[in-house]
Length: 501
Image: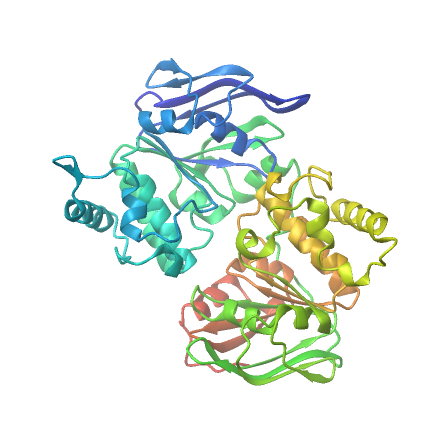
């Protein structure tokens, strides 16, 4: 094996009195795909930001191509060939795909930008990596999965020698995941070092050669991927085992107490003839590929999609929510698929985010003290770190931001909570805590509807699973009697001949 192209040696990082990294050493090799694993707060992001020149280490050194180097900014790291695809997209929505990818790397002719040459270069670049997206499309008009591929294409256009990918598949369908994995394998053949930061255990084994696991600011394990199994990785990440991937063996909820009944619900070109029941205290799940219609169904139940056919009966009354405010008034909460765009109040602190759905229940004079009491209680119950209600919500890690969004609806004491991809980009420890809290709510009689593409999680957390394909429910499964293979087979339309049970 060639020597490491990028090496972190004995890295330490303190923020004030808080030690985030302690004596961390990790090597990244050309033509190798390395997984960088750890729960939120383990130190992964800090380490990557140091290697990107965003933070300076308190101690230790960085070597690039065998030379000790100090990056004072991300642009310096990029100039050396170190690129990063962040989980939160960094695109210009009002610009075209071509303009985003070319960025400032224009093809010049006689001191002027040669736009035709730019188009030709970007077109060839997309074809090389088999990314199918219209050059002239505005980013804001693309679905989130296509935007993710544009973000990756933009990064690769700079011809990097080391690529960090932060949860790159979190918004992709299975077909788009295949494109991503082919891109990673292509980069590997080109001799590029690829670092995959992921919470999806499956892709660690599918595309990675080696792994490094961080916990509490230390490297606790590293080596060849095939020397580890999933349980061992989870144990290293958490310092204990987790039940998140263990299938539920029993069914909950009262079959004689129907909380929600949906009859023949439909929206043109989105989904049609959707009918199901949710029993009190039950957790049901909707599975399906991106584009199956499940997210549109979630948004419709919360009043975001206003015009639809069919009937919704909630606690014995016909309802027709035409706005999130009206749905919330009925007693329905919603955790959206994009916490950044729809879930978080990014300019406010954690307290304001947590209590934003309970303001109608807090008395005027006791408001401030009550807000503080509710926020502190929810931070503790949902194990949000750092446990400081006054911090800006944007300063929390992705997993802790997601716990803030979930805690908002727990605090609001709603009768029904709808969660769309609730563990997207969340580590295994945070996943366990989110699902534990949902189970506690279900035990209190709260109805829970999950919309997710994480098959193993649905099998461990739900009572029944409805499979959606091309806008229709094609199968209902009892979780305790089902397998991951069944869920996946129906999700891709593999058993369309069978009708819903």
